[in-house]
Amino acid sequence: MKPPLSSVAVFCGSNFGAAPEYAVAAAQLGTLLAQRSLTLVYGGTHKGLMGVVADAALAAGGTVVGVITQRLHDRGHLHDGLTRHEIAPDMRARKARMSELADAFIALPGGLGTLEELLEAATLTQLGDHQKACAALDVRGFYCPLRALLETATDEGFLKPEHRDMFVIETDPARLLDALAAWTPPTVSKWIGQPGS
Image (cartoon, rainbow, N blue to C red; front, top):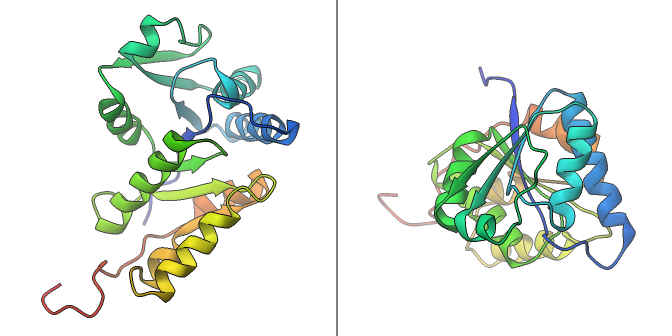
């Protein structure tokens, strides 16, 4: 039986985005994580949506763990109100440590780093390196293109339907957290039509 969630890593932009709905959604998610006694693990900065989700979780009495790189720490980007923080030597070590600390992953809207973090976590789930759910909070249709790309990858024979469908993509933070709690890992290998896989 799968153990209950106790911590969630949130990947998100260090910018605020072009519309206020992004910050509203980040705050809603942070508040809900705290209300459900889920530890927020995130990149440790006060910048952009990262600061918003951390501030909301802290304001609601939640536990927030930041994992920040040495370079960003040295530039003064560390959020000064965190429950605790760790300093990682670089981005690769930061991602690995966040993965160790988290039971599941959620991506809010963001840029290259956010997308890369989400897809790396999902790849590790696909390969069976861990059995952790990967989700995206779809604010303003931000993740509709990702959903379409996953469909194309499946249609073109690069991705199994089970791996396409393992992504949790929801517009509502509460439904998203419910889906993460109910999630079960796929049980198929990644290879398609190849013997010995």
